[in-house]
Image (cartoon, rainbow, N blue to C red; front, top):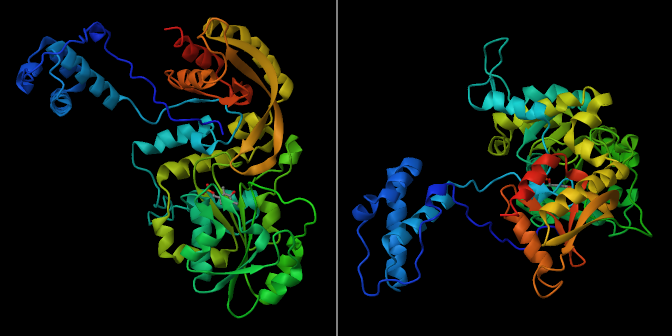
Amino acid sequence: MGLDGAVRPAISSPMSSLASVPRPRDQIQGARPPSVERLLGHQVAASLIETFGRTAVRDAVREDLAAIRARAEGVPDEPAILAAVEGRLSALSRASLRPVFNLTGTVLHTNLGRALLPPEAAEAVSAVMTGAANLEFDLATGERGERDDHVEALICRLTGAEAAIVVNNNAAAVFLVLNALAMRKEVVVSRGELVEIGGSFRVPDVMARAGCRLREVGTTNRTHLHDFDEALGPRTGLVMRVHPSNYEIRGFTAQAREDELGALCRARGVPLAVDLGSGSLVDLAAHGLPPEPTVRAALAHADLVTFSGDKLLGAVQCGIVAGRADLLRKIRKSPLKRALRVDKMTYAALEATLRLYLNPERLAERLPTLRLLTRKAEAIDAQARRLAPEVARRLAGRAEVAVAACSSQIGSGALPVETLQSACLVLTQAAGDGARRGGAWPKRMAAALRALPVPVIGRIADGAVHLDLRTLEDEPGLLASLDGLGA
Ligand SMILES: *Cc1c(COP(=O)(O)O)cnc(C)c1O
């Protein structure tokens, strides 16, 4: 949802002096294109060289001449060729990865980069990224250190784990645990938890790739303790539970109790791993949100827990394995740990974000993910009413703007069936805009919003474009971006 087709924004020229270069329709039939050197000697080319450098301009000229020859439709005049060259250069110099306004209503939007980092994390990243850092260096002894040392004690303090490691994402964390602890062995999983998370992460496929044999127990809706009991044997490497994340089974259901399963695994000497997915570090219910299992609660019965760094935790993309020290020692020795490790920027962002959790009283104010999730519907509604006339003025003649109640989602698989009351701006076609109403209009409007200097990403519903304001903090920034629509 949210992300309809991929219409690319139009290229806007950074060089106003060239904006008036004519682009004549008539082309000189049968003529030979000018030489590269001739074009580079042009006065317009000189100003392009000043901006982009000689090599880039020469390459763009060559590319454009090649395109003209390939089209074989005649040769444009020199100003037209140079205008096209400038278009090529502007496109090349424009960043592909850019900030956008996520007004989709999904707070942790995977396609829009999930969690927003707190400023403390951005500062920590900035501090280590352009210089050397003690990433694997123990400042006390002057000896080699462990990169996980920068966050391990914090994770343990916040979750009750004995040890922890960080890898590239939670998918990598699950893969590493399976491979390091249960390669060529059986992994016992409930049939109700053989889920697919986000297309390419399917629990049975990950097991197979990690070299494990899947031992399914129970049924889709009901799995009992005795199902696990009967499956455990000399070939068992691991029992794994997977938080179903993006769906919910309702009705006649049963799952073995966490505490009983934990006791069974301990008695049989088999490790129990839980893939929590989001894995909150705090009790969301205490913040007025729907409850989600915490890492600490899961570790009360499980030996290992895996969770994402950029879901409810609110930090950077990474995956964390936390739990028993002896198991983590084994995992750390795996050559895969080296292949899946993260860099100093990730540790810097994660460490700074985790430190905010040391002051839980201020967490909801300082951690953007929690701050956005806990915004009250009334506050968002007041914001929508305040902004509606401002937005309407900028969309005058194109769209009518109304305020409506709506529901936001947490996103990234967390609490899939729970929604949060929110408010949105509803953009509908203005009376004077275009002949036909409805139909293609919302798509055109959404495309125009995506083409803005800071693209605005909404959601199309009921013939309108909805902008959910739960995630809008930079109001002046949004209005400034919308100013671009007038042009
Ligand atoms: C999201 C999720 C994953 C994948 O985590 P990434 O950090 O996106 O790799 C794995 N398992 C569960 C249960 C999840 O919810």
